[in-house]
Amino acid sequence: MDGSSYYVPAVAMGVALAAKAPTLVRGWRDPLLRSVGVLLALACLVFLFAAPPTIGQVNDLTGIPNVSAPLVYCLLTAFSASCLVLIINWRGGPAEATRRLSRRWIAGYGVVSAALVVLYVLGDCHEERLRDFDTHYANTPFIREMIVLYLASLTVAGVAMNVMCWRWAREVSGLLRAGLRTIAFGFLFNVPYAALKFIAVGARWNGTDLDGLSTDVAPVLASVGAQVSAVGFLLPLACRRIGDSWCTWSTYRRLGPLWHELRSVSAHDDRAVRISWWSPAELQVTQRESDIHDGMLSLYPYFDSAARALAYDAAVAAGSEPVQAQAEADAAMVTAAVRARAADPEGRVISAAEAATAPAGRGSAYAYTDGPRDLVRMSMALRQSPVVAAARGRAAARSESDFHEQSR
Image (tube, rainbow, N blue to C red):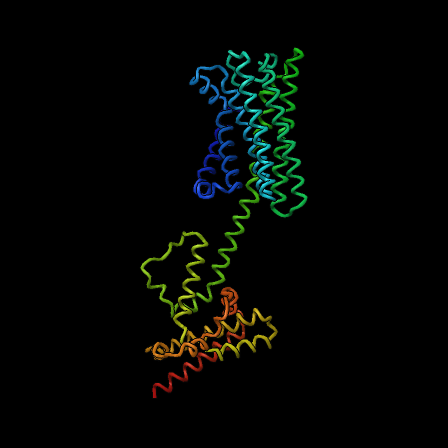
């Protein structure tokens, strides 16, 4: 494997970390977000420092032959621990139990990392090896133990990840289950990776040369396993984000009929500052809801509780459930109020409402504010409900009649 095979995933992980940086900074106290950030950073570093060109550069810069070996081994060990901690925090549970289990894995792999450094210092490996360090020094005292220790730690991490992911996968469904199974499958590659390394190292112990298993085959398995696991981590998170965005944009679209109904009475077209079309979906929905509430506020004096009650009874008689009937009644009152406002260009009703001094009387006209209303249901009722269509027709006929009376 050449340097690009390592640098491409390193760059990909770095870009993902940079994209997540604002969220990670804001929510660093969240154990799950913190685990995600550490995992992305370590994954980037592992691919970066495991590349043969980087190994040579690090050795040259430090002036210490093969110093990259314990560095890469420690990064792999830390990465294994970060994956385990992420799964633990992702699954959740009692906070104290989660923290205790995370600390155990971190402490255990911290001890392994420290032991790797000590063994390297005690060993003798002055001849630089960029690709076949494991097999070349398989019989060197202390270096031999360092190699076995790091391979054993990877094997334990792969098995532990599989056990935790499969146990959790039995308790969940959907994309999360698919993601967990993908993660488990990816970490399963750790086992044949370590096995091939052990075989090649064991062959050196017996005076046989099977270095190709370690230098050519094992790195391919490690790369494939890492990429498969990355897909498993991203699958449920990315799909959930896409699903949330879809739901948000769906809400924005479904609010359209009510928003368009109120455009003629809302002042949102006159605002000096409007959000751009590329703004986040949540902000777009908030803006549309604000416009709707502004429009309804301007219709305040024209709301007719009698028209609402009539529409509610008609909706119930047509078979609508109470919640749906309430939305249809609200929508009928809104559409009637829009036409009443259009028939009063001089604003006589508004002037009369402003001059009134009896708050109770105004409250009865706006009696429908006895609780929050489902704006989406109201919007859909404007488009689909025959009760609302009938109320719109009556309001239009009344407005036309009032216009003829004023013209005489």
